Picture (cartoon, one colour):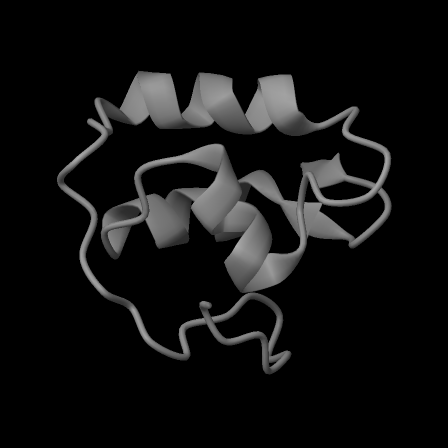
Length: 75
């Protein structure tokens, strides 16, 4: 299911990021843009993070990990 209409990001993509160590909405946004435009999807992203048991402070450095094959490096 698409959770970010602005960037076309699906729940599967967010779940994959969580599986790779992403632990907060801001990091999801830096990597694939979800939650960075209108903000309507930030609550859905947070729900996915919470459901996965993601905990702040445990994030790995993912370097150039990205969604949908787009190059969006972490700052």
